[in-house]
Length: 150
View 1: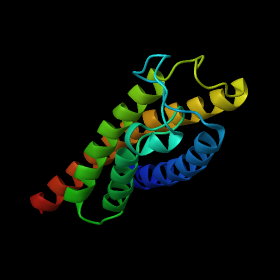
View 2: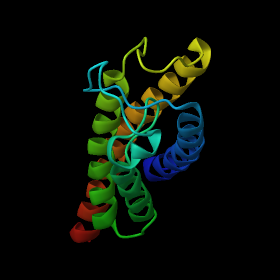
View 3: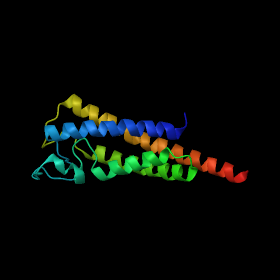
C-alpha cells in the first residue's frame, strides 16, 4: 500500500479518535492545561474550539487535517506533495500539543489508564503523520519527476 493510502487511513482513524476524545473531554470537563497556570479557570471545555482540551487538538488543526486528507486522495502528485508536507507539519504540531499537556493534570482528574491511552494513541498518530507525510511527499516528488522525464 502506498504511503499516501496509509496516511489517509491513519488520518481517518485519528479523526474518529478526535470525535470520541472531544465528547469525553467535554462531558468529563477536561480543559486544556498546556500553557496555563493552575489558577486559570476556563469557563467550559467547549473552549476547545480555540485551545483544545486535555486530550484533543483545537478545531483549526482538525479542519486542516480534513482538508489534507482530501488532498492526499487526489491523483495529482503536486497536491500529494502539499498534503505530505502539511501532514508532517501537522504531526509536529500534534506532537508538541500532546507532549505539552501535563502527565498529572492539576485541574482535571482523568483515570490514569484512560488518560494514558488517549496520550499514547494521540502521540503515535502524530508521529505517524510526520513519517507518512514525509514518505508521501517524497513518493509524489519521485512520481512527478518520472512523469516529466518521459
